[in-house]
Length: 407
Image 1 (cartoon, rainbow, N blue to C red):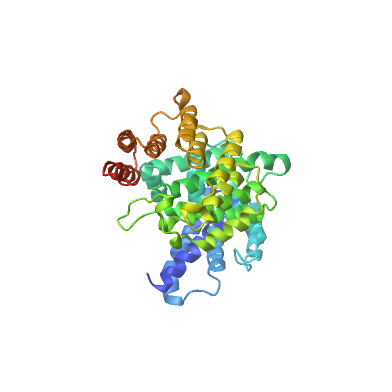
Image 2 (cartoon, rainbow, N blue to C red):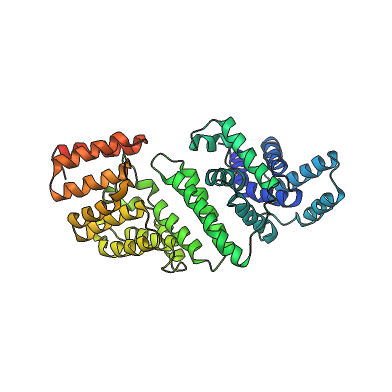
């Protein structure tokens, strides 16, 4: 990639959402805003190699996109009020996005809350956030959701139409409404991160979730759960380069080369954790992640502390997966029998039936009790149920290790 192409890509990544957000606020037209932002990027690809990269790439893109919107609106004979608002935006256009233009930055937060409105289905919220706030190509979103590009295009179109038809306001709620809506926004960011962090996920989605969490924390200071979510993301993502071995196989925490962890991300996570408190679900999960991220080896892991945090999390979120993870923590803190007892409670009622990680947990705890033959069978059963190739291979490899008598 040439220096000019890299400059266009960087400017697009940093400015696309800001430009779209600003134009949506003024025009109320999502498609027009996205088209004008894309037109600006296309013009940059054409002109910057010839004319050179401008001193203020983001400001250049904003100006081009804004002028394009003005032209389209004029040709469409849109009411004078919108044109005058665009003119006022033009007067402010000398301040580039990301360099102190708080009105533009606030637009991005409005856009996040609009995309994450509870009137939309969760999948639509995530897809719309990826497309509009993060600027991810529709084809890439479709691939992540395992649908065709045309199907994803229709879903995005329906989501935008619902926003318009339902009169969903383009604003950040205030007071009690903010408190009520913020968890929904954080849930979308959490799901976005998970889609990037999963074994067969798209890493760029995790990067976008971290970037958006930083933005939300900066624009909504004093919200401890935002800081907790950011800390959780950073701790988890700090291990991204160490999660796979030389052959591409997934590595569990105890087998990862911790020198390959991103220690700058861990430090940033600890800083965010200091603002997160100890009560919210994301803060508690961040404290658990910190227990892993801040020790030099797996042997130093304070499993008793982790078990205590999971006890607290299970009181707030007694979901089957939380209870499953609690069983793991207790199994390491107090012995495999204790873990298996809690696992049995979590499995009661069939909540974890057909869930490969539950079988894998049972297999590992069973192996630690000394029943290798049963553990091998459980690992193979978990692998057979797994849909992701990386996860399936890791489970099969663990079964093979135990079958060969390895620890």
